Image (tube, rainbow, N blue to C red; front, side):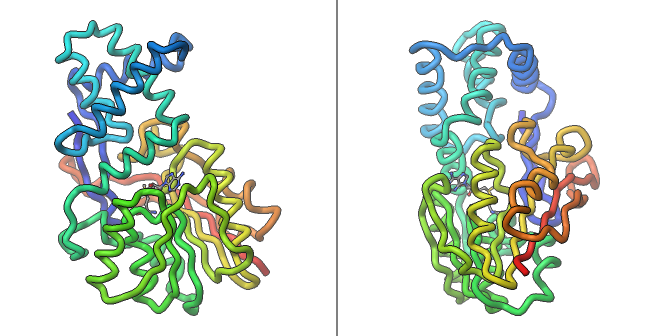
Length: 306
Ligand SMILES: C[S@@+](CC[C@H](N)C(=O)[O-])C[C@H]1O[C@@H](n2cnc3c(N)ncnc32)[C@H](O)[C@@H]1O
């Protein structure tokens, strides 16, 4: 069973709870890290194809990132032994970090939840990051770039503050939600549908580049941090905010695998050849849950081009 929680920041959290699905996921992660999972041949391709087909065809977007609890429940219903289901889940965890279409499919499904464009009703879809608000409130508006904009909550908020915003993502569903939100707020954003692996931003063109909660595998993260750093104009700044590695053991919600998490030091290291890092730290984000107030461990890196 998966639990949904929403933080004060508006970020939707998905967390496995106790139950057969969660137990299978745990078993799978143990298998994965004990090296007993190996990807080979067409049977692994078939396992992956079955997972993606199930994921894309589910009537409601499955919860979780990746949605392993619900898929484990489906495998159990299909009559698979606990051992085989665990092996398959572990394989999927591994491939989820390697196959770009998994992340794309995931966000297209997540973002397909209905939205009204009204921030009060749409929560995560529309409420900007409190950390971002705090980090840019003293800046004079100029040209801004939002990398991995999702449903455009931060891009639209920046536009309402007078920034001329370009927002990039490969989820057409997410961008459509952003367009709706911008319309609702009567602002304009330049929406760009692109895969960040191939996308090349104009060099030194933006007074502000932001990347929030972009948590793909390490190689893509570092690539995107560097591309965004290159897009920062003289006197401009890069702000990267995301789920910290420490969240896995000390925080609430967020991606449940270390491979999708990072540290402020990793961001700083990736961009310091280009920009001067002026802030790199862990921060706690309050989260309201059914079990009472908790916190998530995020990180913030701010780097400037002098
Ligand atoms: C957790 S969401 C964060 C969205 C937004 N920054 C926010 O804070 O609300 C991560 C976003 O990164 C996007 N993303 C991940 N990998 C991508 C890629 N290779 N190309 C383009 N977008 C990607 C996803 O589609 C998703 O919208």
